Image (tube, rainbow over all chains, first blue to last red; front, top):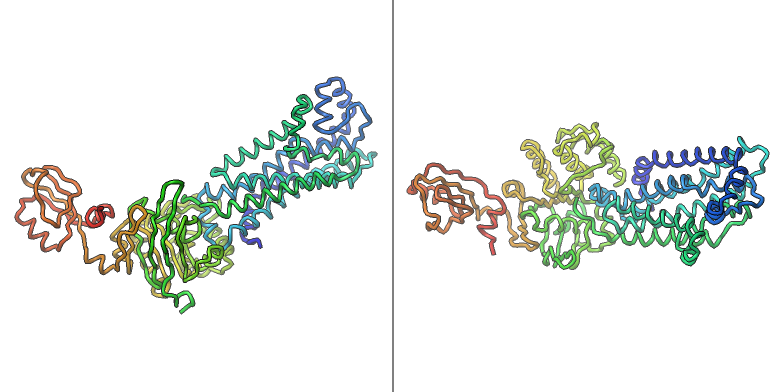
Length: 272
Length: 299
């Protein structure tokens, strides 16, 4: 059971970051949709002239450059862009690490953990807030595409269910990032270290995604990167939800959270 | 009398050990804190007082041994017992962006207790402005806020880790009055300190800890019977550092002109000894904990 006072305080501490991330993502997707509507086709033609960029687009975003590409598929690229990912993950990691390692570093863990509240309750209370942040950050691109499509691409029939499924894939990805952040924060003594390690893992996953086309040997370890299970462009193009990928991401989320919380519940809290 | 107060001991610690890697910092502590008493937990810095308090609270896990609170030793349920515990950490840190009032409201809400009237009373006792953000508080004000959060829910057991640090003498007396009030209601206090005088002034009993071991457990009467005084003497004529001293003298430091020592006998015998010694100046005071250890508890 959550402790609602801790939920409320965590929300108050995080609401600016959550609101900023969601609105930032929304604004970015609106701009992206406007840009793709006006110059998406030209962009793909330009990209098609350079094998290097073509490979990145094909392997990184899942777009077949040179083939028939609908505006909806181009809009779906906004889900995989670094801006929404960095905003979402940055917010989630900030919330997760604030409680698990930030309270210890700041010296306020003595107040929080001597309340008649178990550490598991503290973890659940904080988790409610970052899961809400993850949901909002996963919904923002969907809302952005729907509003942007209505404004800038009135003739395009957007596959709403396809974008909703891409949003579900985004949510699973953000939850996996939160689970990993919980695990890493529980074993770190400094908040900066925890954020740094999560950032390094995220960067590693992004790099793997975009470098693998040029280094086929990396294909064998592609499965270790979270982004391997994040395919919004394919989802919008085919309309199919990749259930296996969602299950893998949710498994990472649940296992990361459970192991991280287990470690944190048994951790010695050093004197401030 | 509450159910908790009917228990003979609020805290029972048995064979408590704590190691950090190969270093053992608590070597099998055994002690009890009787319900309804103020017990002083005395020792120099690094003796293990804070670690012991943190194990009692469940912030740190013991390597071995057992801690019982009101007879209950179930570690997973420790968080429920914390409803009846108030704790002041050695370093009081708060959320800097919250005001004192918001901090206390949050802690009370997390405890699911209505503490408003007690917060108001304690803020008045300690003369603390709760409207200011905590980041504008001085260290003394943060200490007062820490004391209020430790006492606001009227806990049956109060654990205070060196509570008088950063408090001015007037507030210290207000705190002592408040703690006497707590005990008069049958509640229990474990009070860690490295200052002899405040333990003597306030406590019913004292547990003396040194390097992770208990070296003495005494009632305050027994403790006072060993009254030790710190004496500084300035000689009129230079004296050889090798001079012989009475048995009651335990030298802390000395040179040709000055002797700093503890005196473990009556004041009359001290005056009698000094009268024939040719002195320029003498001052008598309370020894530090370290000096007390040099006198009584040296290995």
